[in-house]
Image (cartoon, rainbow, N blue to C red; front, top):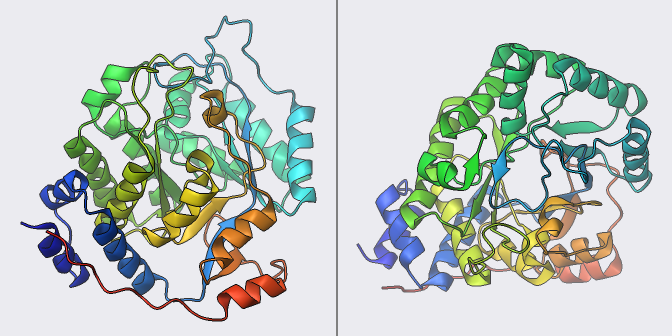
Length: 380
């Protein structure tokens, strides 16, 4: 089937098949795929704004018992550079974020061999007692799965106890590619596909919400990239608990896989656009300017994303792999308004803030004329 026929079918409402998604990823027809993704995004989000949030990524420890060839951040349990953040330092980081208008922390770390479930509960209670307004978007599925082993408790009990202690939502970290061949080839001692998905499933069944991610562009095949999307789409059909999907390209510097050339902007935009077409049951797609930079992160809003992601006051994992991009709040907001949308701040549940910073004159001018949807380009 031609690319044009595949895209025409999606625009007409046909669910994208795995085989057709692979065909799109194999294609060089980036503009056509992007236009189709943009059309779907406009249907889902006809509102005159695009969103962002303000949070801080706090890595409470870099000690990890897993060995991941793609990770430049972790340190083994006996490594001299291993750390667990002092509680006062962690609280000071949250206070700094709150002072500039942030409402959420992304709290993640390694698979620490001796931190107990009670330690995590105490940490959450301490955070919520000092900062009740801050949502803790915390602990990736590998961390949660690891906690079940350390505590010898069921997955459901671990999640319930963390929720009672103050955990607000789950991030999609540690997803990489949800195919066991890939996971087994580049990591040891880390959760495999079914268990990663089960963490989200059980959290959703408890009424929780979470995000989903994909790190591509390393040893996976294109069919395996689509298999990852299929596993997410199937779970979302079942639970409806994912709020958003975020993909980014593997950053190879300072890792054991630094001989793999990084995937570029072309592949990023195409992968995100195909994800928007495939994940028809996901309401939101986030841009990844943190790995791609402002210009490509902005362009992602025309390739299926409806959200610029986070201002992210701190980031350690990607930067450890040599990729460092920083944006001010004005730069993040202008990336949205330059394309004709109003920038609106939201929380992790995609609820808008009423006390959003007032639009600047440039915001009004840029958003005064709404963009007209482009016709789907011919492709073959």
